[in-house]
Length: 361
Image 1 (cartoon, rainbow, N blue to C red):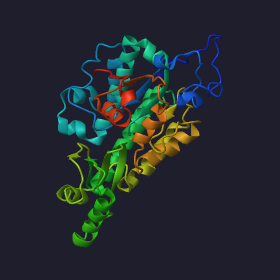
Image 2: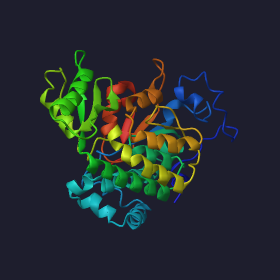
Image 3: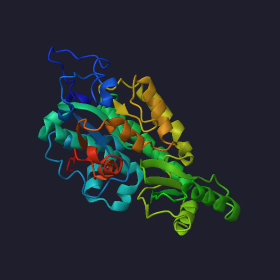
């Protein structure tokens, strides 16, 4: 199944051929240097799609998508490959099962691409005039599949291996993730260092100890991840380090930190088996460096790096939506379960958020 055929098309110029991406640099749109779109297409009529990641799942997701042509077949294909009833898990849970990597990551992936099918039917112009995409964590693979770098089945295979490998890493060293709100006098770096020192010097943990920022969500909001003992220390000393409200994320481990190193090789082998990615037909912004993917050869390198490196989500939103005062914004659609990416967009760029919408799943 090549998802791109039904969910994305190249917008043509008035002469019927794509214009050069380097001829539109007078436009107040930072993406003119990346995507092959004609200057005649008003920016405000184009769209950027955002695909969510792990943590956006909820029991009952996908129930509003079952009437969309092809969606049940997508879930049947996924269930056959995964050897589990993925749709039942999405609809009925239980939540503890849906939280597990091996269920959650493919569930969010399939639900998001099913939502893209719904979007193509309900608002075809948002698909036809899509000029860029980005995905949060596992959502980056979703975005790459949407953009044609991989087929639906190839993406599902990668996510299955990724989820299983990350779960094994989680089982080796239990960890977790916290969102933390910061103020001008917060001492986050000192807190992270103190948490690591506490685990090494006082608890004498005989395993690798990590406590670090694992995702940049906004100027005053980060995700930190690490050993459970380190996170317990942070939560117990939040006031001392002038940290704002903390929230434990409903995930199985310390994602996007070196504690996920055991998952790198399995994913690397899976990428080799799938073969070289095709060049995406629209720019997909990488979580690793907030830069758009170019040729397919860069895809496997970034996807393996993403597992152990902090997510540059705030930086990705800046890359997509920073522009001069008065410049128009595209329509911005969150495609998948939840509205968490909309919340991060609101923190980073309130003007862009005014153009935000989501697909009900």
